[in-house]
Image 1 (spheres, helix red, strand yellow):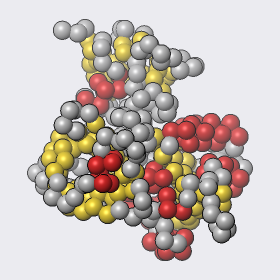
Image 2 (image 1 turned 90 degrees about the vertical axis):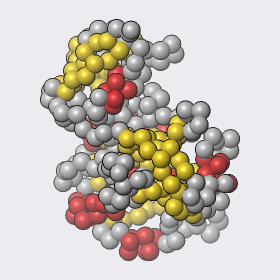
Image 3 (image 1 turned 90 degrees about the horizontal axis):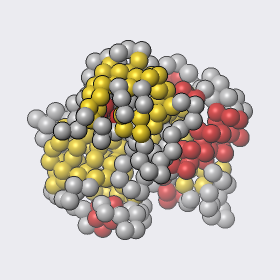
Image 4 (image 1 turned 180 degrees about the horizontal axis):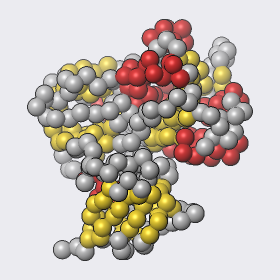
Length: 331
């Protein structure tokens, strides 16, 4: 049996056991301890936590992050470990559920996006929070992760926005062949991309289907979000990438009190809106983000660029940048 080490999460005192061959993040999630994370592939930096005590190792090719941090999605313990994560509660949280879900709706709003609605059994116990995701478990055990885009309704319905990726194990099937009454094996919920209970104004930044978890937040928490003051910058190459925007005015009527700014990197000749990279539009409009919170979701390159530039150029406090990276490979 693999040797296991104790892990504490300071300052609140959550604790769990981690086998030497398991990552700290996987062991934490299995124990119901929700450490901050997103991509689970070691690229986004969302899971980096201060290492207060102990030693860890990383797989070959993975470098230790700077400033004494621990990249928990890749780190394996070499001893007992103390991590620092003030937002992590002492007691275990949500239960991860595995269940069979039946497809109850398939809609294709663009030439590469499928909106899928899945019904889980009422007895499954699956309950998600806006911003979280679930895994589709394929027959060979591989997984694909998709954020819920709907408001939790207590009825076990999940809505996913899936972009078709050429060669994708599940996304091509979802776009080309998935139909009502198909059955999918679902596991979740996962993720800590959750709206914080603060009063600061909000900047949402989405690329492509990164809009999905933000849509869930808007539907579930619109009065709170509107009262704080919020704007969504939604970026894509072309207007069809913004698959739920028939017009800015219609979108803003759906979510009153929240502004929408679409940004296209490859606009048509008749486009009169914002152009370029979506994070650069935020920089142009907000020379000072010191009193804001940012919630960014989508392409990991966008996430990395937004995090670095917002913190270094417009004074966003690092702890006020919350992100979920959408990858084309398994989380």
